[in-house]
Amino acid sequence: MSLSVSPAEPRAGLPLGAPGIGALLVLVAGTLALGATYGPAQGALFLVGGALGISLYHAAFGFTSAWRVFIAEGRGRGLRVQMILLALAVILFFPFLASGTLFGNEVRGNISPAGLGVIAGAFMFGIGMQLGGGCASGTLFTAGGGNARMLVTLFFFIVGSLIGTMHTGWWASLPSLPPTALFQTFGAAGGIAVSLAIFGAIAAITVFVEKKRNGALEQAPPSPRHGFARYLRGPWPLVFGAIALVILNFATLAIAGRPWGVTSAFALWGAKGAQLIGIDVASWPHWQQPGNAKALAQSVFADVTSVMDFGIIAGAMLAAALAGKFAPSLDIPLRSIFAAVAGGLLLGYGARIAYGCNIGAYFSGIASGSLHGYLWAVAAFAGNVIGVRLRPWFFMERRNVLRTDG
Image 1 (cartoon, rainbow, N blue to C red):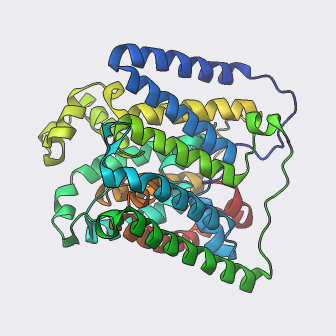
Image 2: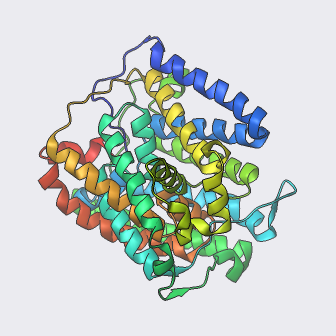
Image 3: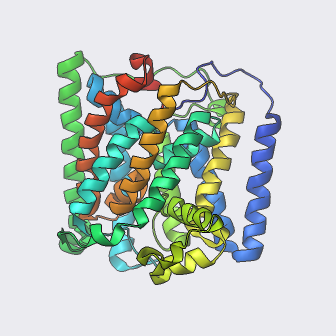
């Protein structure tokens, strides 16, 4: 999920420009309008989404690309930063999830059954990550940052999500373990200790593999900017990006009462679009469930996940303008479009049947101590291995693609 909007070096002193001004106005006006219409929490969550978009873009925080580079080249710096991300998250989340309250408000984690649906869906999602060029958050922030190809991925991500809602009942009926969280089994302190041991072991494996394949550990590339300019216009240090994402996810937990998620909104957008062309999605079992039926009947601006997703797009556009890299191009190779279509469908369908994506299941699921989050990570990594092997057929400049998209 690293940056894919322009290979050009950032230019000093570049004005914000129309895209940046427009994105800033959307963030300010949207926050005020949502707060006035749906309550202060909804406005605040839109702003949190904007901050997530800025953080993802400026840090070029990688899920897809980090996994791809490790699989293809044995470089594990991105994966190790992901372990830092998860470690900070469980330390921050577990005590409050165990108590069930945060700042006096009720909170709950993303804790779902761990079964065959998670394995199948995460495996599909993993393949889709590599073909689509991004994950859930990656699709949003790179599309917002001006990547036209990711709009294709996003559209078919939405289509795949809608198709997935047709079959969620069947997948949920397959054998699975009940929803279980580590802090429920071991307590908050014990759950943190178990989690940190797992993350430490994974980080150690990446160090061993990287040294064996490359002789030394990869160092962070030098930044073209320093001081305040670096944090305003990017690129951010990767660890700084991880810290920002954890803090913003925690803010989401505090305001929304549950951690950050992305893809349930895609299914909702697809369902509303289907209704516009005469498809009776309201009769589908998935959309008859109380929470889903309520979301379908209301405006998308009443949906927490949708509002945050909109914020991510606007925030990424603002960040791209600040970085001087907002330069959309429609020059997309045909094979790359085919990959975006196939990848988007796999991403959408997989996320729906696996109880989430790289954010809802992997980041927020593991931050919640959910066993399904760990199962998702293993199955998705296996899917990424297949996806990396399929990429050369779709992307001719294989070496370049390994580090510049998704």
